[in-house]
Length: 421
Ligand code: HAM
Image (cartoon, rainbow, N blue to C red; front, side):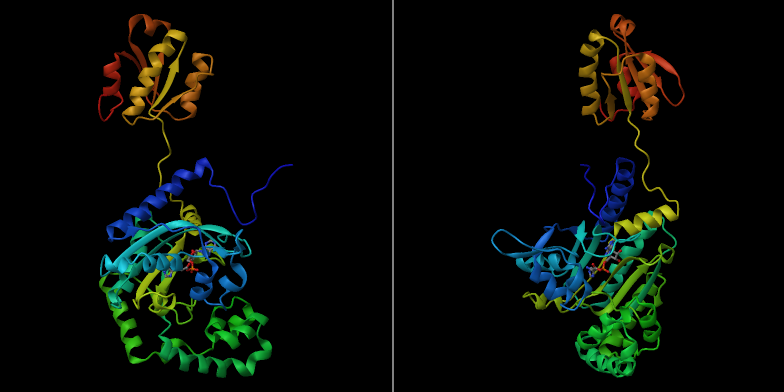
C-alpha cells in the first residue's frame, strides 16, 4: 500500500524550502521593523472561540472548520485563522498590562475544509499582524503600510490594494434593512446559500461568488452610503494617512470580508492574475472582538496573508527571493589516514559556521569531484596519500577550477572563515 498526502495539503520539498524560508524571514524583518513582536499560539483551540468570533453564519464555521472531540469529550477545532487565537492569548495573558499599544505578529499553519484549487488549500500557512489598543485611524494605515512594505521588499509589483468601510454596529442596522429591501423582490433568483444569508447576515450576500448572485449584487446598496459621521471621518482619516505614506489604493464598496468581527476599515491586497483565489492578504479593524470573547473593551486592527498565494505571485513575476544553497566545502578524504586527518578538520570548519559536505561512501576521486560540482560547492578540499605525506591540503576552487596546495591554517583564510578556531 502506498500512502498519499491528504487532499488539499502539500509538501514543501527541499528545492522550494529556501525560497519559503526567505519569504518568511523578509516578513519577520518587515514586521519587526514596524515594532511588531512574535506571538505563537497552538494549532487547536476550543471550537467555541471560532464559532463566536468568526460568526455562526460564516462559511468558515458552517462548512470549513476541522472540529473534533478529544478523549474527554471536549470540542476543539484546528484553527481556521489566527486573529481569534491571538486575541484569546492577549486576554488570557493580560497583555494589555504590558503596553498601551500591543503590536503582534504570527506565522503558522491554518486549516479550512474548503474545495481545493490553485491557491486554496485545506492546510495553508498564514502570516499575520495584529495591533491591539487604539481606535486611531493611523493604525489601520500602519497595518496596510506594513503589508505594502513586505510586498515591496519581496519585489512584487502586480498587487493592488482595495479598501472599504464596513461601518459600526449602529450604521450596519440601517444598511442591512436596505439590503433586505433590495434583495427580497429578487429572492427567487438567489442561490440557496444567499437565501440563508438573507435571513442571517444580509451583508454576506455581497460576497457570494455565484455569477448570477454577483450580477444581482452589483446593483445592491453599498455600506459607504450608510456610514454615520464617526465612521465616515475614520475612513477619511485612514485614507489621508495612506496618501501621506504614498500608498495607492482603490475604494471597493463591495468588500465585506468572510468573518463577522470586522468594524470600520476592511482591506484586501489582490493579485488579479492569480484567478479566482486572488486575495493575497486581507484584514481590517475589529473593535468589538476582545469584549465579545470575554476580554477588555479594546479596539484592534490587523491583516493576514497566505504564503501560498505569495509564492505563486513570486513565481509569476519570476522573482527568486533566496540564493541557491552552496556548501562552502566538499571534503574528499582518500584512505584511512586521510580520514584521521580530515574528520577533525571538518569539525573545525563546521564550528566556524562553514557548510561542509562529506560523503564517505563515494569511492574514486573523479566521482567525488563530480559530486562536489553537482552540489555546487565553492571549494573541494582534498586529502589523499600525497597530502598525508606532506601534511598539506589540496584546495580546488570549483568556480575558477584553480587548485593550490596549502596548510591547514591557510585553508581558513582562503575560505574566508569568520574566525580561526
Ligand atoms: P482571511 O481573508 O480569511 O482573513 O484570510 C487571510 C488570507 O489567508 C487570505 O487573503 C488568503 O491569502 C489566505 N487564505 C485564506 N484561506 C486560504 C486557503 N484555504 N488556502 C490558502 N490561503 C488561504 C483572516 O484569516 C483574518 N484573520 C485576517 C485578519 C487579521 N483580520 C484581522 N487581522
